[in-house]
Length: 333
Image (tube, rainbow, N blue to C red; front, side):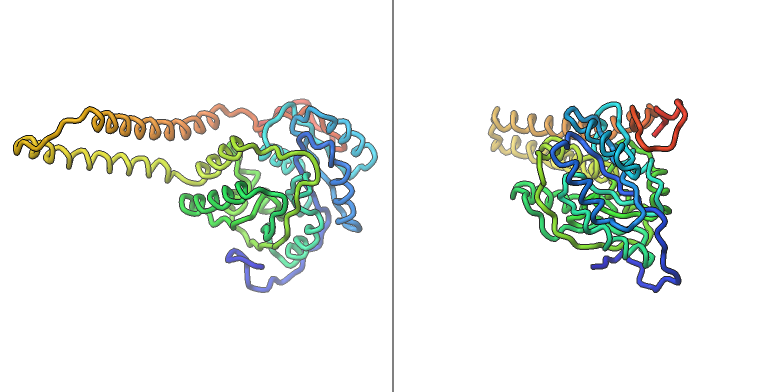
């Protein structure tokens, strides 16, 4: 299923794959890591590929399993981060270290099936620069999760200026050119699925059925989902600030209109003083002001994070990667 972003003119050449990089963040996934590795290898059998696994500060047996897999298969590259930096940053670390001419982002929980990757590669060979997977069915997810996902995409459509496909996630393939453009964007509050749309290039959707989680529990709690949603909207829209300003003008207008109304009621003797209504008005206005200040504070906090210039992540260990200088361990990424 193609979207409006797909280039409809026939391209004069067919791309030849030299190396495919599959990037997957891993956090406390010792129950399914072996199965994920086996399914990726089976799905990409006969293709030149590397599997870049990023350990995002796991506290279970994940580091040991990663070391064993890397020792047994030189195609597996392992990057161990010094602590948990978050899902989007872990993916970025893997993309930074990927060397393929086509790169796939995928989660290791097996909800996104690796078997879809060859279909994505077919679109890439025909000239599409970005191929993103769209979920047509989402097994194993609660009604609450599905409802909040729909609400998020509707809010993002209303507030942001990026045409993000509904039910698309981070499972997508990028050609080297759009990937380099993506990696040039080093903001800390990252929303990769929106960033890959923002960079442009030719883009095509591939439908798939999302499976239930193979093992373990989701790492996205309600609090993390809310934070991720606000990061996504604030990264691509200033409209929340504009709405706060508009709401402030609206409340002020109501107050100015109310002044002559109150004076007129006093003159005619129909004014009925009420402590309750006055208290409600004060609390309402105070709450609106605090929300607006908090909203401004969220944006200011993000500005502060950016101007500090800290690296996006710090690498503790690399396995099966080309040797790097010691100064690169804390490079400004």
